[in-house]
Amino acid sequence: MSATLESPLASTAADTARDQVSIWQRLFVPVAAAPLVFFRIAFGGIMLWEVWRYFNHGWIARYFIEPTFYFGYFGFEWVRPWPGDGMYLHFYLLGLLAVLIILGLFYRISALLFFLGFTYVFLLDQTNYLNHFYLIALVSFAMIFVPATRALSLDGLRKPNLRSDSAPAWTVALLRFLIGIAYFYGGIAKINGDWLQAVPMRYWLAARRDFPLIGQWFGEEWMAYLFSYGGLFFDLLIVPLLLWRRTRTPALIVATLFHVTNAHLFSIGIFPWFMIAATWILFGPDWLRHTPLWKLGGVPPVDPDAVQPVPALNRRQRWVAALLTLFVVWQVLMPLRHWLYPGYVSWTEEGHNFSWHMKLRGKDGDLTMYVFDKGTYTTEEVNLSDYLSYRQVSKMATRPHMVHQFAYYLADQLRAQGRDNFSIHARNWVALNGRDWQLIIDPQVDLASQPRDIWHKPWLLPLETPLIIHQPASADIETD
Image 1 (spheres, rainbow, N blue to C red):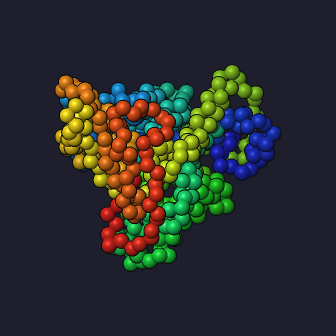
Image 2 (cartoon, helix red, strand yellow; image 1 turned 90 degrees about the vertical axis):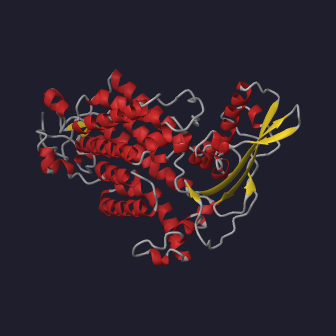
Image 3 (tube, rainbow, N blue to C red; image 1 turned 180 degrees about the vertical axis):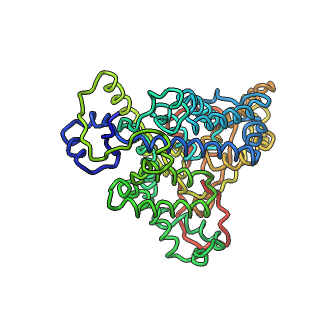
């Protein structure tokens, strides 16, 4: 193969050539494959680490074996854990698939099975929802289609024709897009009244005054605003700064410091390390292909100044471009759907998931559920611990859609006992971002008779308690 290919970050004569072709043709311009290859290795390594964490912390049994009820996502309630020791076997398989991804062995099928296996775990219970799990599900889906084994892979040793120093530009751009959209929409979500008043950041910082070096100032007003507005502008600007050559290196340093601080300040698992790896590999300088490890791959170097001819798109490429467009449009619109619902999304939770609303709220909940017997006019309090784990109850108490879902399950249990003339009610008090307690669900409404759908729930009570800034004795606020 000719060693005259275009670097994915080059700003050279090749850029002039690209200016003369359509945006659709640019998707298929050959670029350096090094980011895909190294990201494959990093992705597999971090996923293997996450699988180990589930074994090490006992989360497999705690989250997927011990509960008797699971809060499935709307439309996916049929997804259930494997019986017996099946969940342990499932995680062993995920670990094996992560190793195969690292090695680049049977890559396509390994990436496909990992996506299916990880997404299956993700869909089992909304209690375990985390934005970075959603991001990993999206990235693992994209990894199925990108040619990430063109170097440093066992597939490349088995099939030398797979080895190449280049890949279509859309493959790198797709992964950048997924990382970038998490950053950008995370910033958009921070443009709200609470965050702009340094809430709930001020309460979280107040609880971490033991933090090394700077913790002594965590009780100060200016520090709360520095973290809040710093996070806002970081999320909004980091991707453009990474894409611009002149600011790329300082942006990488700032991104690393940002994520390392988050890793030590908040309990957010693998997310900071995943983002550091993704940011450096996918947006970093074009240094990866000059490393000794890359040279072991046996592929020729890339000439970033080479101008490549860009032919007209064939039928297959037009299909790829169309499907990419649909995927991108979906990812752009999905986080905006909460604007279709009335009320404050951090309060109602309508449209909160899959919208990159990260670290925006601190919520406490106090929930009591009742069964009213219409025949005897008696009210019976439900012992939630008979059905749910402590963690599930805590999460449900701040998420009305989960209360609604559990009411349906409870109604089914009562009908199985021969009872049919009843209604189910909830007295659900919630405190959002340090506000006073307020009811979030109309206690007069029979939740078991309300339809479960994607539309606004009229039984949700609007947020009426004002935000009052105060200095808490402790920051005992459940974070997202």
